[in-house]
Length: 302
Image (cartoon, rainbow, N blue to C red; front, side, top):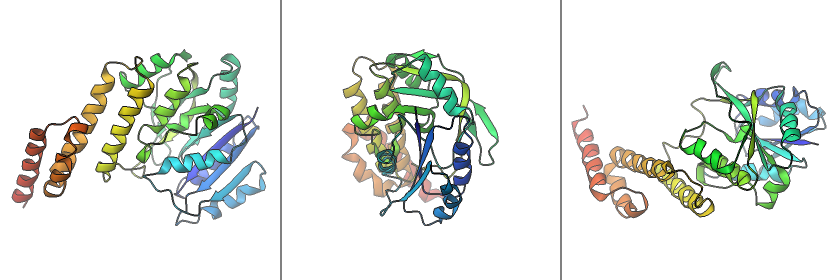
């Protein structure tokens, strides 16, 4: 059994650490696919010393997918994979040495699932532990997984899921929303829909939280579009399985984003959102109040 580890990369800062975490795996049956998204930084110089290992491959995109279409690069990585199972990790994340070995144990215990999940530790920019996420039940149905995500507001990331490559390719790759908004959850939920998901009890993956992760704050229009697309996709694909809080989560998220946009740039954004109100779960009066607050703040600004 072979694992395909993919790193869709753009930044150099932590890339060496990410690669070294793969090379350090106690399970040797892996390939590492690194796809440089046309970065202005010299990523090849970081990767080159590792290319002596025949398990490691490096590719560079001719055109930049960019933050808005980052899932495109996830799927480009997938196209280069030959393993039985796939992990898509960030270029700033780390696998613990036991990660693939623990996945082997999960697969042996729960064979033929389309998705498995690693317990995660969140680290800071220096690599220090910030939070170790709670262990999840060893096995969950899709409905139990959905309830945990939307009701309990779990923290989960694309890098802590392991997917069957055959299933992922058959489905056309990772679910693609702008800015990768909910793309990790959506892909994992879809993979768990028929057979459920197995969760590792031991910490296997480290997610790095820092201020250079994709920022949606400067892409509010696109974020609302992504949120709206994800909402409609979930309603279509998981009718009858979604917890009651699901609609409230998306409605409140969209409302918060629109108010933030209108308050910050009232004269520019108010006309745009007036025509979007029916899709964004927010009334015109709420937008008007946000606009007035924004105008007043600019007038009173010293």
